[in-house]
Length: 91
Image (tube, rainbow, N blue to C red):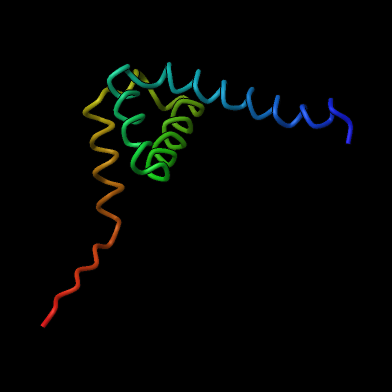
């Protein structure tokens, strides 16, 4: 495969990532972005689902102002409640 053909998907991926970052920068306050970055280190799946939801809200125009840290905390809590916790008791 030629070199320019290999770089094309990388370039598209970088552009897509840059667009996501731009939308998140507008849709979240700096504290909320920092919290998501911290969550991403521990639970990347949870962080990406919050990011997708925020991007959908912003894209559809349902986001009136930037989400703050408290709102992101509430989103994280609501997603974590859905997870079933399994406890093993030893007898």
